[in-house]
Image (tube, rainbow, N blue to C red; front, side):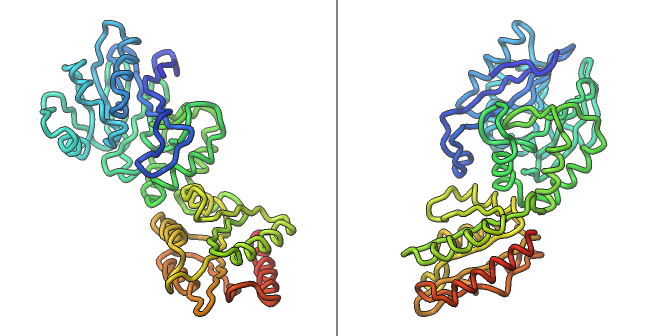
Length: 388
C-alpha cells in the first residue's frame, strides 16, 4: 500500500483483507488498513508500524522508497499491537534509528518486547514539544485516552499535516467510499467512552493550520476537514447527528416484533426516519453506533428469567459503557405472567445522564391487545413531537 501523499510524504502501511474481527470483537467485512507513513527529507522519519502479520511487507514498502538510504527516526504514536508490532524488526533493519515516544510509550514497549533492550534508541518527548528533524519542524500533541494513555498526535509544520493516531480512523479500505458510517462504528465502539479526552484533543489541534489528516486506519482526509471535525465534536459531546429513531428489539414468538412493526409503520407515516435492529440477528456494533447517531431510541424486549433477553441486556450495557446520554428513550416490554423488562432497563440506564425516558411505556402481556395498539400509536405521537 505504498503511495504518494505529497512530494515528501508516503503511505507505507498495509491493507488487511483477511481479518474477520478487529480487536477480536468488531466484524470488518471490508477489512482494515494499518497505516504507516514515511516522511522523506534531510532526515527520514517513519510514523508507526503495522500488525505482526504484515511486518515484512511494511519493511519492503519502506525500503522500496528509500533504496539505500536509512530511516533516522521512528515515531510511535500508539502502542496498540496493530501499530507497534514491527518495532523490533524495524530496529534490526535500522539499528541506529531513534524511537520517539513518551514515558507511557516506553513502559508499554518493555511490556510487549520484554527481551529487547531499547535504551540506546529511545528519544523521550513531552506534550507540545517541538523539535527540528532535518528540514522539518515537528510538534507533538499528547492525546491521552484517545484511546490509550500513551497516544499522541504528530504535526508536521512543513506540510501542514496532522498524523492523528487512531483519531479520525475508519474500518474498511483506503478508498473514497462514504466515511461517516464506518468511522462512527469505529469511534463509538472504541473511543466513545472518552468523550472528554477527545474534546481536549480537538481543542489542542484547533490552534493548528491543518491541510490534511493522516489517521492510522482508513483514508487520508484532505478535503472538507471541517466536516470531520464537526462530526467528532458531536460524537465526543454525545449529541445526536440526526433526528430519528432507532428501535432495538428482541422477540421470542413474534409478538414483540409485531409491536415494533406497528410503531415503525406509525413513525414512517409521520415521515420520521426509523431504523430497526433485531438484537439476536444484527451486528451489535452497528446497532450501538446507530443509537448514538439518532435522537431517539426505543427498546422493545421480553422479560426473560425476571431480567431481559440476554442480547438486549448486552446492547443496553454497551450503550451505558460508552456514556450514552442526551437522548429520548421509550420502552416496550412483554411478559406473560410477570412483565419486568421496563424495571430492568431503567435500572441499567440509571447511570446514563440526561436521558428523557418516556412515561408512555407499553406493557404487553403475551400478545398485543387493542389497548396496546392504541398505546403504541400514542407513543408514536410523542416520539414524532420530539423528533419534529
